[in-house]
Image (cartoon, rainbow, N blue to C red):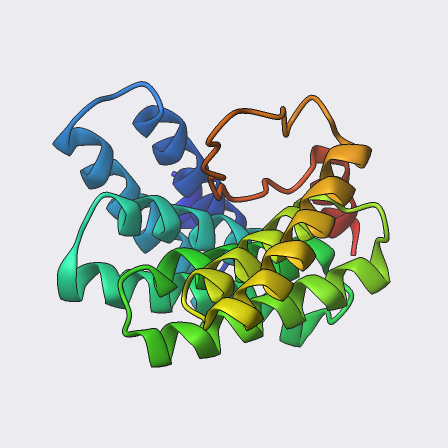
Amino acid sequence: AALKINPEFADPLYNWGRVLVAQAERKKGKAVQQLLMRAAQKYEEALKIEPDKIAALDNWGHVLFYLAQATSGKQADQLWTQAAEKFEAIVRRDPKDCDALTNGAMVLLKHSLIKTVEEADRMWTLAAEKCKAALKLKPDDHTAFYNWSLALQLRADNSIPKEAKRLHELANEKLAAARAIAPELYPVEEDEEPKVQPKKRSSARRRKRKKS
């Protein structure tokens, strides 16, 4: 009813998207993707009404992240690109948004895994730059340190031995920094393989956005 009475308002569409995401979290299989695709559509519709609605961009970026992980090939490539665009759009609106920078870096790292080495190398470099920018804003951002370590690790794995050694050492330094800040999130494991996950915006930050 609210949508029919006030179709120019973005909040009902945004909230609808959140409800669909919540429903997807309780489902399995194709139902999850279907609900997430509907949620993405609602966020898109909300942003047509209110283009600077940061929360909608952020949620849309996360939805695209999960959709990209569930697909492959050309479709995954497009979804990763779209997810990166959403976080970049947040940074354009607010260059001091640390979460958008770290999430943008995370998407680039995931996307790089399905690209050629040449394309991936550019993504690793850009991801590292985003992490550096995030750490200038928030020096204790463990996610930024962790994603930076991943970018260095990926570059090392695709470099000549001498350069690889240097990059591995730098990657270990960044990982150690992340562990020093949040040891419970990055336990030391034998033959560990770091995983990249999106950083969810805190509820306090969401409330702050709502006031602005």
